[in-house]
Amino acid sequence: MAQTMTPSAMTDDQIERAVEIFRAKLRKHKAELPSDAVQQVFGQSELGHEWLEVLRKRVEAISSMIVRRVKVDRSRTPQAMLDATGRKQYTDRNVVKNMPQGEGEEVDMAFFKLDLSASDGYISDDDLAKEFALRGLTPDPQAQGQVNIDDPAFADEHPNGTHWKDKDGNYCFVAFDRWYGERDVLVSRDDDRWSDYWWFGGRKSRT
Image: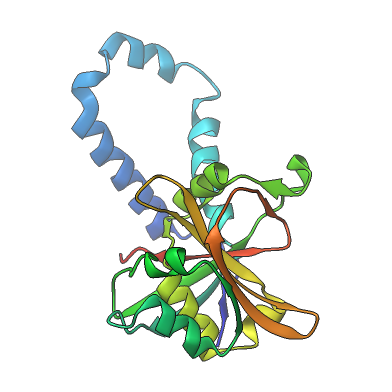
């Protein structure tokens, strides 16, 4: 079953944890921060608000994600993964051959959708990579394929893709979709932008 994060208030324990994290970071880097300048910054009324906004941005980025836990056979070739989806394939075989294998036998895959209204409904791969980093997610095409194997109907309502760079620094992608009633999967090099039609999937970091 899909798990959609539901909002709830930050707890007192989480506040204390936030303070601990920030305190540890300050102690590690205190030699880089001149004391007199730090004291002046403390007098700036907007400082607390800016700190809060950093946390708020990251929390909002993950608050509407869909999470699926999957078991992934990392010994399986990328082509075998695509075959297991049972989808019509539109692929560049060389890109398929060099698709990353990923890591972890049992992983949590998170899917997010972006509001791209401020950028005419599109996002570049470079900017998309920043969105993955913001959420602490790593593209994992093998694990994403497993989600679509386990639940073939998932992409009917959540057309989903991910990307990665090949050894030459070119972006490549895999995308799972349903088009004119046909479930398909596309794998190729990417020389275009992503539209707001897509959900994006990435492997959550273990904590």
